Length: 289
Image (cartoon, rainbow, N blue to C red; front, side, top):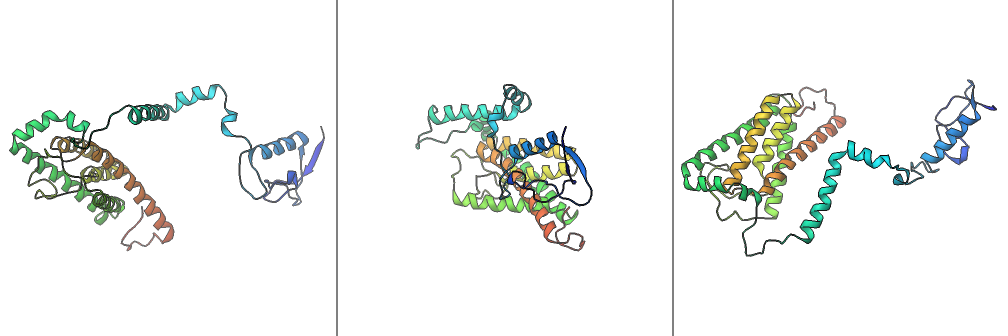
């Protein structure tokens, strides 16, 4: 077998096919590479990555490399995205072409309202019970607010506080941009948050988003039992909000998503600031962890 004498591979240019590779440069140390090995390097370079401008690109379209076993592997290993893809096809066909929309003269349809009809009738017939549940819900809002502020002021971890600031600011902008009326059968209470039966934004639920932010921070700090407690209380407050017609189902669902989103954004903000500033200054108002 013929051999070609070359030096160890270093970052330099090579005339090999006119491309830039992890190429060959002579630096005094010499070793032998077989012709077949050299051809493998050429083939890998040509098949994989690409042009003289340094852009990395595939010479073959991805699906052209699929085999019959690949779809089976995808379904077995990545079954969650496959279910979501089925959901996309189903809801695109059903919602867009078959489902009749609610006419403008009718009340909005909400599946959460349908599921909590019995709770609504109970609360409507028992104003005192409605007041007690509203007061308990307000206490829970105070609990999540206290925890979020505590993590910053007492523990020096501002991520949850930054998340809440992001979340409530965005909620205010969206709520003012599209002002939705309360459902006609809304059961209000003077002790419900915001206290005093004042008007409030429906989209999206600040109650649920704040609880989600607090729960995520608890999990990050391994306070799993406390996080589980907040999750259970969050579900219970969601049921109460639906039962009193204080929020639509979409408000609650987006509230969970908003909590996750703004917690992630706050984390990215902390990382960005830690790269920009010297985090070692313990007297800094905001410290990254």
